[in-house]
Length: 179
Image (cartoon, rainbow, N blue to C red; front, side, top):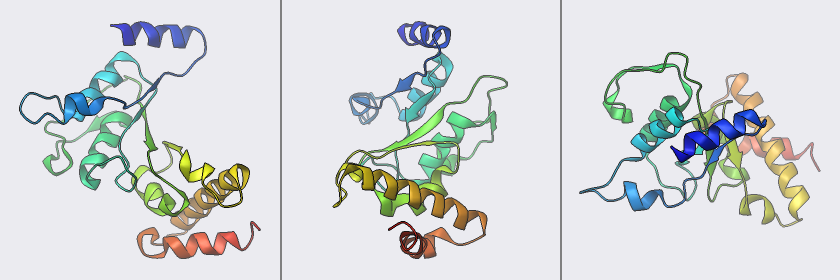
């Protein structure tokens, strides 16, 4: 396929292949004759993508939490058990096929970081466009705010704190040291 050829080119030239989710709705929102995003995600993994937009649950890209977590596992894990509640309809053994990093993007900002940390964990990519550029002090402080929030949430999670309940407080505490 064209995607596989592009993946080979990227590997040969030390590049990563980012698969954008643009136009997915043309295929996967058609309930009668469409193709579910789960099928697209698997096809992209099989054809050599390195990272793909996976929905966010909390941003503007729609997605139910459990189903999004199912996509994330299908993209990253070598083996995943059947779990219909997460949209995984049969056990999938990817053996040694490389995983794909899920990308969280689309309307996300610093206050989404606790949820993003819980949903995506450490092996993911977070793309903050307007969530960085829209910072009241400018682009660079927006980027710093995202990084500070990420590091604070990862540390809090590793310390056993409940990000769903304490996430906003974790970020407020982190801002005291980043001014």
